[in-house]
Image (cartoon, rainbow over all chains, first blue to last red; front, side, top):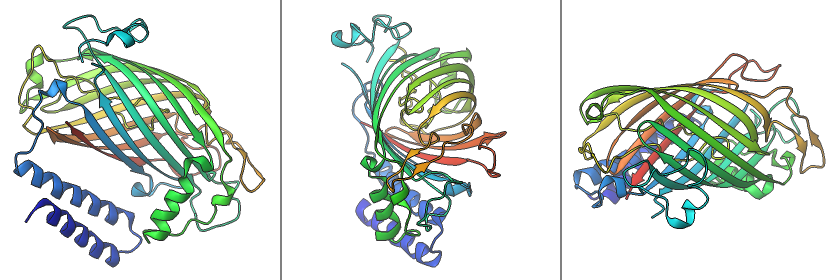
Length: 89
Length: 294
């Protein structure tokens, strides 16, 4: 099974859970994390990784937050962010 | 990454605390960020204005951050450029996720959102270790703890504030550097605080690391976009909050990964009267971050 198939299966599983528990944001988030984790595990198992020394690496970061996850109210808010940390050389 | 390049050294490198110390000194990095914030009232199915709740508001912005740091100190300066209002595309993003993807209730009140406004912010941050173990203690598999003190300032019409913080990190394979604090870009700093010493690499970056962070912060806020009220797209005027939310907070972080991946889960717990008078609940929220190094 390749990584695409693993991720697709994870999404299918998440979709089944989502249908079963429609409206539950926590469930959907777990599904996304599960899908990411499957991709991550597959990549790690394959030994994929950067070839440069760690201190020369650039970094890309994706952030998501939401207050619904902890049942906070009365406000609701969410945020998406992408960050790239680069060297200046 | 050990030295500013000549073009940046002429301005960034001359700012106090942002020098590179020459060869073998602090490392310098550049970070670029893009961020979208969506704020809505609690009940998004109400089409009418809700002046006693949060405004309908979206913010979209870009940040550029220059930082200089090692395992003892970190300094960073950041410029945020963005906009508040329909220009943020918050309405379209939320409607797509909620209605088109069928993931939640359809938002019906975006016609009440705060109107367009340009946002500019300048931020500066400095952190310093109070307690730190010897370099070998940061190796994978070893348990280490360090403690830092920090402060930051922000000026602009996204937010104007002063912040003080105490930062505790502990865990197995604790990386050198400081805590990744996932504040929204512009309100906080966008940077990569993990320090990798090229002169004395601790090695083992292909092994798992698991560590925890606790950051206690106190903010003195004098301006916060979204809390200031203002004209709305329906021709009305949304009232400003009586006070600013979120002055005292504690951030609990769980961090794990191995090269090239890492993940961070951070819980923002607000203390005391985090919300203006009339609100009984909390502002607590969680952040999930995924990083890839290449």
